[in-house]
Image 1 (cartoon, rainbow, N blue to C red):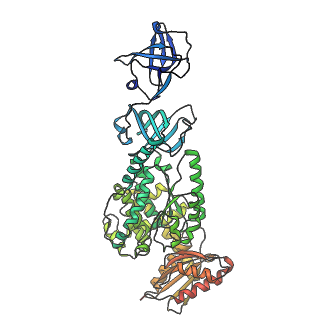
Image 2: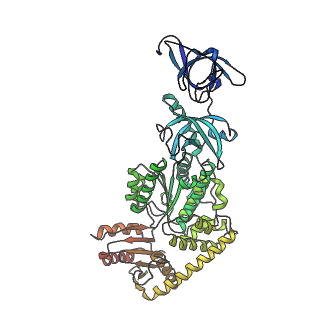
Image 3: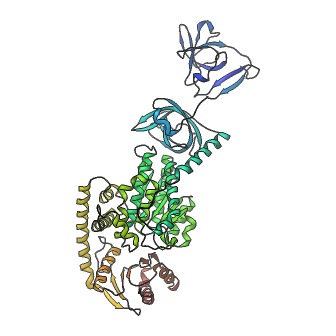
Length: 613
């Protein structure tokens, strides 16, 4: 048959139904089967009619193409057809006359056939169907398409495509799922229409709700615009099914900050309609041993992200840095993230270096608003978590107090956060929780210990387990600290500096137990606390050093460790000096063979620093 001439033959789209069929018109069909009274003709995947034997004009075999005229559409849905022969005709495609359904409205349409226009956010091939994650202006939905076990359905469709999907809405594992009957890419103006609608809606949905801070703080108010910006990026990642990797310093402050965000994000992922394990493959929390984003960290994150993109069709992740990410030590890792086009947001209270900002899409740091490290990452993280998802407030409102005592904050906000939870989590208990976190994280190493950490922070709804666990961990930590300090104290070297400060030095590699709790930084801090008690009222600096590192703690000496590190790096050729931290708490690395020169230069700079009045 020649597809020319004035006769019009209609070809039904695969999602067309009875509403798209018209009596008197001619349609393309395929012979599907035979009966004594005629032949059955398939018009598309959803419609089938009968050509009575009196209206059959030629011999047919199954799957033969045939042209048929619609004689009648009966009230029960049966379709009466008559075979037609045309030597020349024109084909006209019939597109479904349809109304699209928003994902947020699917709860009332279980078992019904629907059409959805949206963006492909993820493609995951299972041993059975292909799972497409669709995003529209109202939410996220998994759509299952099956060709045969383990075979990729609709291979022409990729991540980021704007598509029209049709099928039946079912419920699987208490989550809605579309059983796909057809899936096709939209073109031209339809793409722009759907994408513009999605983008406009995402902008509105990603805007954080207006919530007052838990406490009164002028510094928080000044930081609020950038905090909302961070919350906006995180909410948008959730709503577009973009994976999130949250990196944080592995101490009580960093853990408190990160877990607050974790609680907000995982709850929002569940609320947004992800499947039962969505919160695990879309969100990952990972501790960093150092208070900065190490090359080892970015290498692991990129390795996992790139493998997941290949295996599961995931987008590349949004990277969140909590209690790290602000210093020039972060730059090498951030440069690698930039090569892959990763978005990075930072929430930190270390003294910031301007060089990192060109790699970040948002950066919250109290120094940017006239504050200092006393505003801890845990305080900032909890307030941002409430902007992301206010529903988690009751579970996380004690975390700023834990972070404050764990990081020894002296900011005015410390007392206000402690007052906020004094009835349910008094200061002494916050201190125990902070110590338990430090102790447990030491043994977890690089693992997040998600459920254990939640038990320590009383987030799993078992107060008795929480109390017993914290008490047990604190007992173990205090016993280890006492043993360590008792071994260390006789080996401390003391000297008076020109500015009147006491300098205490201890070789923690030679005179402390290695590879156990407390580690060198914690050991130096505990020794420093005891020396401060012994020399009350005097300025005190404690240095714990090893072959190629030194950790510093200071009271009453106004030094700036990041500046001192940069100066030593310039002044000591071949020293390999790096490091940083807060103004009076930090760490330095150097070449082992240059230890004496670096420690000498460091001591001189401490002796020149002004004393706090």
